[in-house]
Length: 255
Image (cartoon, rainbow, N blue to C red; front, top):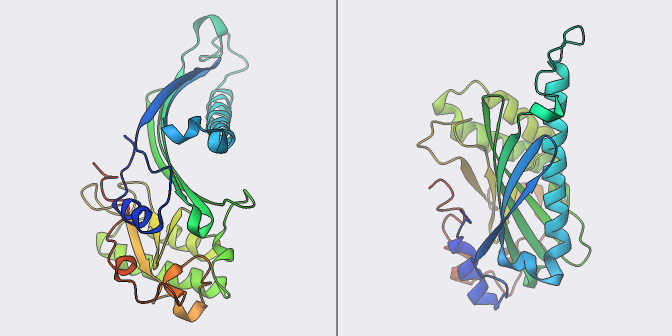
């Protein structure tokens, strides 16, 4: 499914942002060892975004190819005539389904890409959700370090917040995720007054618990967030209640 973001519908109406259609289309790409079914938002057919959508598609197709061939090679017994699926005439295709959602915030010069990926190969299944933020004017990725004057402190604060939130579920991977956020925060969505971190469902909490967490910008104030990316810090938006009452922008993602 293509995720419908209540947050962006409201923000789009407020800022007159174009390209918020939720219509989608699907394409299938079959390669020697893999087959990928990709669902795109309609804006990927626009010249302005087609190149970006093609880049993201090639990135995920190539990464999947590389991972699967690496897996087969690792389990290949070179002393045996059994090629474990490398025989081109009798190969077993690995499959993946990718849902791309693009959210364009022209007023603040960035877009967010959400990739929901489900993979299956050799009886194994994987589900990952990844988020990318891109500056429209430069076409460059927006990294966590771009958002704060003191990104090291901001990363530590985010890691602590995530740890406190998910600690009650006692999942063994939590210390690993905390360390990753401390060193290289990623998979976040920029909101007008917060950051939302997205995790793969079931990793840090039971499947019936939301796999994301919103960290208010007020909690990160000590790290000096940069107003360019958080409009509530700009004088013209500070008192606009619509930017302070947007709820969870990823509602519906877990459906």
